[in-house]
Length: 255
Image (cartoon, rainbow, N blue to C red; front, side, top):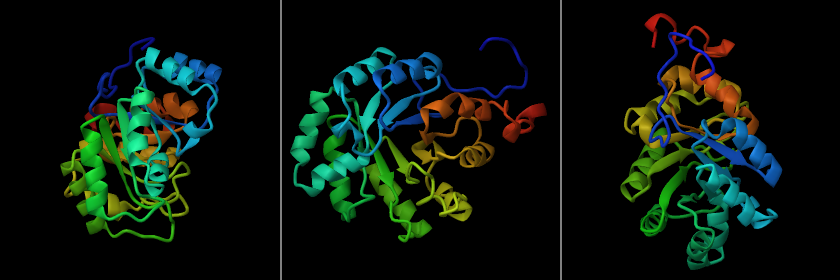
């Protein structure tokens, strides 16, 4: 930090197991990645190349090398995993991970129908190769999954070998954990937390109001994902109580 302030909540330090910030790269250029990391590398723990953007991204190997040099792990979005699986190319997907020397992979079923046992088997196989993030929730806003099912899915996928489970929200924050308006499905989140440890969940929260809600509920070291690159530093100030939305939240030992 550039100067000293008292009553700042303690933040975990990299490499973190909790307090993670996952950024969403939807097609940054090489120069944009360099600029992004020059300001935010200390605050970002994982970068997801959104959905299947890696398929059409120019200079992909060069981009991955820039992230790697900065010590920021990258993984391909879960939709790419689904695109391989639906085409019966899972072995090709595993080879792809090795080709690009990735240490993480995301397993999801937000765009395709997949039996839970099948999904867990994919997790088990990939967990022998990389660190697995498993996404729970549908990208279809008309598909409402009841809380007990979220809990059951998350528990099973963690037991199958997922390092973290991701609560689905898409890049816009309007499905899954959230209503179409972006409002948090508060009862859903609170019920999930009765059974699944917060440390095991990355909550996709692309909108500022969503980030504020989770920080107020779970503290500075809540795991948050799908954060736009230009919002990484703003999010860190939310975590530290240095933005109006959380300004009084950590003062005088309140939290």
